[in-house]
Image 1 (cartoon, one colour):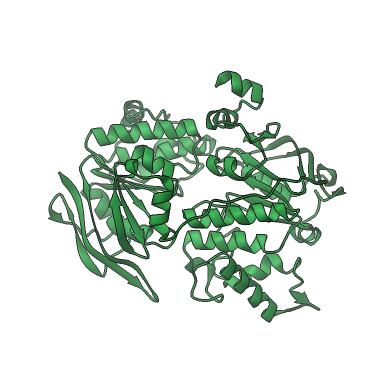
Image 2 (tube, rainbow, N blue to C red):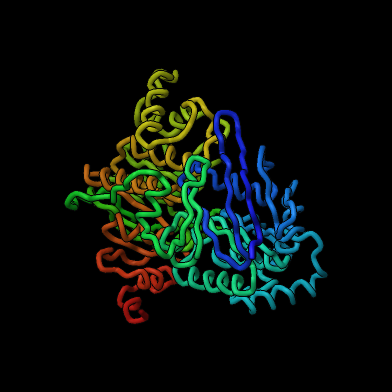
Length: 505
């Protein structure tokens, strides 16, 4: 029986048609995936269903009745709930207080706490209503968002990239919950770039390309490559690495310790590793275990004792970002908008901000605008950044396209050492392959690359060695070749000794 029907939805913005005559049906109790490359129109579509966007043409039917929510509150009242990729939670408040904020008419505190406990037990999502949010792991924070939705008894639950911050074990728990919900009649609209997850979880999929529906199928009967090529409309190439030839140590981290930068941050504790020329070292960890702090310490945003970080034998721990860039260490943080890029500045200005030192884009205090613009255009062309112009503000780009620009900007400076956090988060399969290939090419040319990623398939695909970050402590790096996904998951959970991980596996 059909729950939601979309008929001819069209939405245009200046210079771009986000959705063009989109039609699809979602049955009751169905787990339905929407796939597409960056800029394909997925976000616009789900925002339309959730009442954040009003379509220019077309209509929606919910249980056979016209459905045109004017805002999210109207959508929620009709039975549509959404778990966003980026959590909208307050660290200083309790779980129950956060959940109450997202409900129209929350029960009294004691009753709400009982409802939270009951829902968390029924759906296998252990959660204490009294805990302070800042003390929770990323996986537990996601449970808060899901429980908040479930307490509203949704008919349709929209999930946007729900596993990007989870360990493999937590993904298994989430999938069990979603299958249970579907068996009880809740429909689930699932968006993810992780195609293996789509094949494992979903029974129906719709592919968008340039705002149009180009295919519907059962993903269990398709390969990952077939789905990816349908999304991008061309044959994909698998990233390839030239023979790995490691050279001299370029980056040495010796007993790196640093206090948490804020109340809910993570302290770094005696971190040690060496990164060689020609090598790609992967560091994995569930979100909130010190990744941001490690990048800040390596990039120069957070200062340490000089000799805790050595670049080609020179102590740089007390140097700032510009001094480190001048010496050849470039870095890209996880958060794109507002940290890696200034939202209201143009792409040219954003390129200038990090490349001015390494590419000498300042002369006698004056900006060399022609060279700055040429560099921005080079990044846009090389990394297929979809933008009307280099003068476009960063905030106007889709998340995936801004990610391509930020990563491309750092790679294109030909650093001796590149530190990068979540290089392919939020980008489609083709863009992810291109970014990974560029990282491998950089290493093959003699640079050292440190990739911090929660995408374990990415870690296995492009890194030579792997270490796990847990509560600010880094395990010993081990060869990636031969590591299983289960062993990596155990290391992420705190089994820092590979022999321990093997024994537990």
